[in-house]
Length: 446
Image (tube, rainbow, N blue to C red; front, side):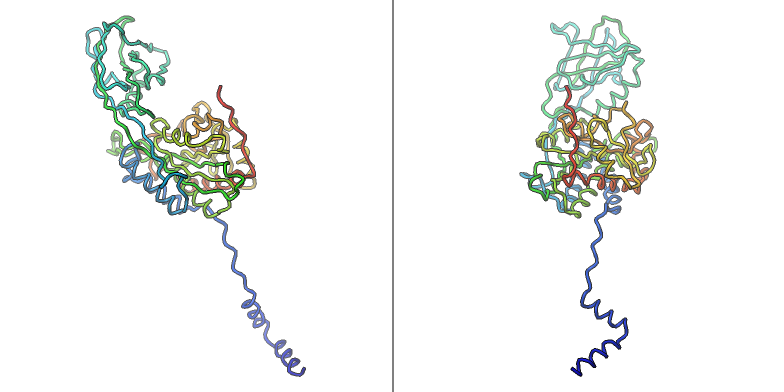
């Protein structure tokens, strides 16, 4: 008992700090791990890589587009995503058909038409039309002051000659720039053509038209990664995060000699967001629902990448789609804001806003309804099938002078604000990702 008493006295006489040290050594706990955050470094690195000159504008069917796809597949592998079931890689390949028109010779009322005033969309290898043919082609006229509605004619299902009044020269030039790059279709095009001539001719006129078209298949690729869900009960409740990685490629040189349409905002910014979100949710590792991360090809030439991807899914098994398009610049509502297209078509937007309460960020409804943005991006295919598929953007598109130009470069972006947008998407998606929120469906079009 005496030894125990002395030991107790000696222990009591030790300095307090020494006693504390003894306790720390025997009862220390590991510090709590920091919560995952969207990586600003990843946002900057991926954006700069996709919009670099060596990507050559990521044109559809061009070497830069393939280079971008391979880079993104490497990012998905680095993060630890899985390929889709049945695929051995992150590349989801598909074929489209490109029709590249050659020179068009047109003669109206015996007078040759300048080559700059004739354009064509065609699926026929060759054509030779005259007004004396037993089955003459259909004639469509666009008079002065009349709005040209040529969209359906650009994928012709019958031979058609369109005569456009010269007062529409500006619109004709825009159409010419589009058609001379060639048109694409998801399958072999039917053997018909639409020829458009800018001219003033009488109501009745004679014509001779001859032309040729080169047709070739193109293998394209979406880049798709899967993060499986942790709740087996929700294995058929898929959530999609997407953006398109293609842009215009090499274009007509600007006055300064730049011919690379880098597409830093359109849509390297949205594709960068997809990579950063994949990294974030993989680190978080608590998603109840399966998450698909998709970089679409061929948005700029007709949305063929998203159309193909959508056909591989049952739309009833997609609970939401976060499509991200052009988030590199400040929105009209100011910093730390973005807008959601088709806001009124489901409660997707209101759910996201609810999850951002108490933060500095806010989502707003699309301020440009006249631009029809809801149906102009890769969300449209699934939205038409009833999926609450919406696009998140910040671009002030009516006044964006860099849109579809060689000036859309990284230096024009606010990368810090862009990172804030990606972080807000991550936070706002938490209920949908966790399976505690399910947006209402988009009404099917009649």
